[in-house]
Length: 149
Image (tube, rainbow, N blue to C red; front, side, top):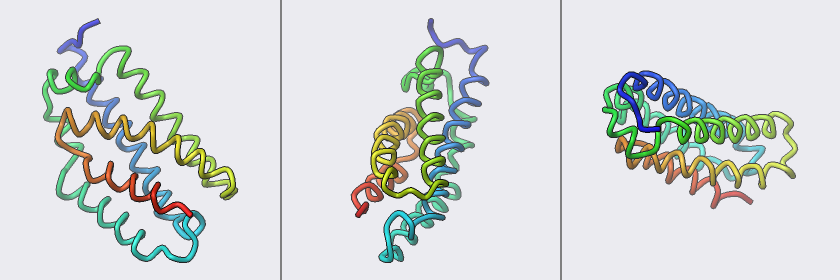
């Protein structure tokens, strides 16, 4: 089914929801850095905090999404069945990551985190290609993955 102009507000809502959900996961990771990464977290904490702050203040991602055209959503597959599938994948990945972090069983965190990185990578790549945002978040999640002990 082609993207439809009359569904544009729904597309904007869903993509904004996915982004908020993912940002909550990044924040929870930031809040649990010592559990995840051990004692050498100062530079990681600074990088996470700086990226999240700049993303919100400089890129203004939610404004960008709200001001985007239907063609931009189409370009990234942010409509119809594609959007529903992406939304479900992102939501499930974020939920599983947060559940794993809340149990503080770091032994099961690594594979859950790696799966989260893979799924979020696709989502952030779509945001970047469609709207020109989220490249810094994409780099940050790679740095976090590479910093895992």
